[in-house]
Structures are given as C-alpha cells and as structure tokens.
Length: 65
Image (tube, rainbow, N blue to C red; front, top):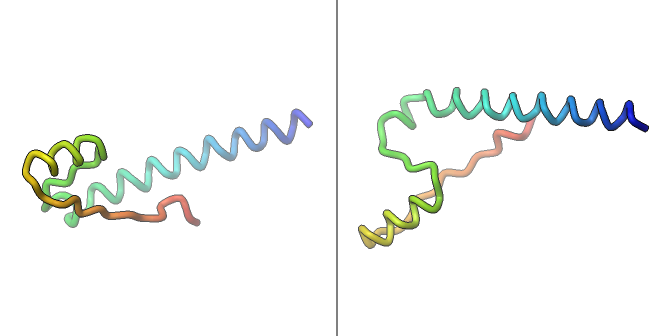
C-alpha cells in the first residue's frame, strides 16, 4: 500500500514540474510577450473595475498529455 502511495506522490510531483515547464515555455512565446497580460485573476478584476473594461481570459489545457 505504501509503495502505491509513494509512486502516486512521485507521479504528481513530476506532473507539477511538467506543468511549470509548460507554463514557462508558453509565457516565453511572442504571443504573450507582445501584450501586457495579467496572470493574477484578482489583479485583473481590480484593473478591469478601475478601467471599466471587461476581462479577456485565455484558458489552456497544459495539464493534458
């Protein structure tokens, strides 16, 4: 039983590292560098309210293989 728990923990850790690597690759692309993206949702809501503008959100499935 402990072996399975350890394997699951290791797999989750590796998956988290892959997600971080994928995020860094994506954020390095010109698509993201050529605009002033806000990646913090609370900050985006504050800024949108301040400027009285809608929020444009970009969603991705980086977690999918």
